[in-house]
Length: 469
Image (cartoon, rainbow, N blue to C red; front, side, top):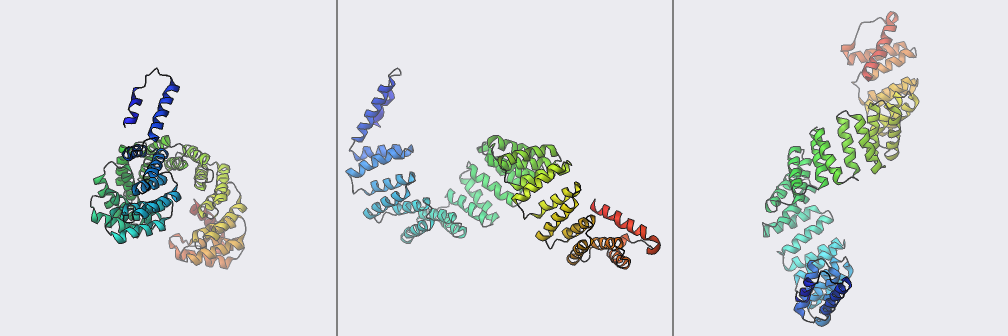
């Protein structure tokens, strides 16, 4: 612009204050400009450089000079939208529409402002006003689709984007949004096809490659997912989420060393992501490197101390390392954050058994069967702990519950026989033992209980140890 030409020729040694004074004088000169064409150039310059407040100042000058210029009111509305002043923007869109009610572009932009202000239903209604007049208005169709996405009405959004593509088969953004919608609708093959068409038109869109990887991953196509993530990373190597999800794909293929490599790159880019540290810990746990697993689970907990999964996973690693006291502490912490996950209670009970805390283990198993009353194995394990706790009555009831749920399972009958013999209920014991043998004849042996009762009891005690191991 001519008004700024002399700014390029400031002397390098010129006093800084003097330089600022010259610039201020130029700004004053700009404000005195009454030529609409010059004002529009100034507005466009500031708009293109995202200096919206400055652009707004000159739009106001333009409106003062030309109050019936529709485009001036329209521009003011657009600038207010860019500044996030949506209520004001809507007022000025209405002023522009009042001056030119047939300008559909203004109505479309008003609808976009409704959408930006999270008034999505009003946005959709306003787009429909345009589409009633011009059913083939691509801008209205596309942006209506975006509004429908935001209220998670993906089926209707798909109809909008498909209409856009019928009108313009090279509309790359419509293909991208179709891929997104199809993903949410679990139409995964269609999603992949849409993303592929978008990529054909826009091969350097790293987000499209990333989303394509997500869909492949959902379909269990982990190698394809890795290919897509790596294309994304070739375009944008600092995209931490792509490193993270590529690591997940490698982990799904049990390539844990490679997964760790990608997770480590992700945390280099985003060191505050607890989920990545957790997944590194999980990969080391899968590799049976439990000390390393503990280290990374601890890092995850330092970043997010309310994620029960990290406490649970670290507890499992401690348990494998036979650091039972630390394991129990982690399981208790996990339970304080998520009381309804039976698997944590199972690990807690196993740890309590390892520490010789049999009554506490029995209490934990009581919680497990209350959470999973249809779990026959849980009732069986509960009964075994109750035997160790010498609560034979409750143990018998637990084994009965297991038998009711799984009648062709021999183990509860063997345990019931053990209780019977311990209590001196010999006939019941023999009956339960014979029932177990009938279900599992491979374990049958000949015996005369009156003469061989000790052999039978030793058999029951020792086989329980074998089953548990």
